[in-house]
Length: 514
Image (cartoon, rainbow, N blue to C red; front, side, top):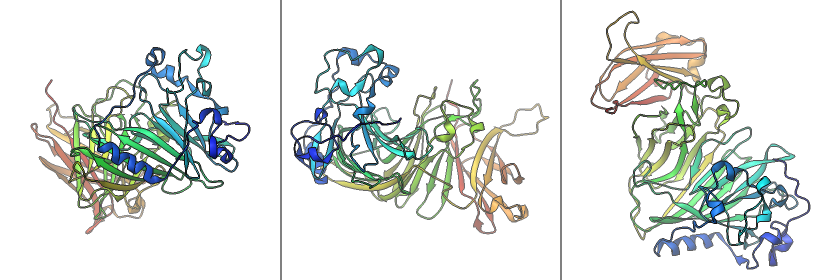
């Protein structure tokens, strides 16, 4: 979206000279601000009973559909933060429909925070025009930051904060797909809690500095928190996150650095729906680098019943939800552009000690449903009155994460002879590995061994053959799976005593009763 804001926008009151907020959108009561402001606000909230966000809306906004809401756009000529030398722009989201919560947004300049005030003139409502009775205290649903990601003369969407504690970040050439969240509580359970970001403070960017800082206040029935995000679109780590959490009660099911995605079907799906697209997903696998140095790849699934997998570690592991398959032919979707969806890779700095990377897979019936959650779950849940400080980085541009062999495709089928009419209880799993030494035409297959294990059932027929189509190796094995329990599978390729591929892991679930 080309931004053509004419002139310099100015701050209200004492901050007018900074040129970052227009007077008509700024309240007249700017206040002193520092990062400690948000920390103290979170601490004070946690000491009081929880008060739910204001969700009241005029009837016309309450009835808006998702598509109706998408037609309400912040006017390009009202874009904020466009002072001389700024690389960034700020636009606000209108409340309505499913985005009911009132969110307070402030701009901070030289230690002074100015709250932004709603006005219908800030938005283009299309042919229908603005409904009547929209007051200045309506507030906003969230905001997005703009940055010239792809061309120096055009502002692209860099990050958006919209709904609960969700936020999404883009890198050059990427389309929105998965989301990050501030916090997860009880993912996939009937009592899952969705904390909200209730207020934001956006620091006006310094001239010619390609980074921007956002502070956020989080609140829910169980916890309040102060967050600080630094977005640096030209750095390897796109987002630096720091937060301090103040529990109101013991935080059971606490998920830190949570990521949320969608997997409807892929090449590993048995019994695909009637769809012209071979695959539909925002992410196709969970990648993990354990503190022991093991690389793990877990293909995602759309299970028939909710499933949770845990990857234990003595300290926080690096992990991410990855869209590894980057070929358009795998998706054939000209509109959704699934091959351009970003991956998010979490580099932990402080995430609460020993625990596990938890993967939750829910059943989805359409691609609009997010059914995948990955997060770090510390073993010890912080209790009421305690504080937990966390820090991590998020990367949205993820080239090959390591130099070893990578599992690039997973297939599952019935095993047994193709000419046999007898039903077989065996399942065959086929994994294509590429990269590292496995991509060399000079590698001697006789020097390689496939190591496959199963938590239940007997493995047989482990084989490796060269797959020249991918410059790699195809591994396969059969499993005599039990009918009464779910099974976890693992496989990797070794050369002598050395692993030359990541560890592929998978889960086979017993079919739920009809």
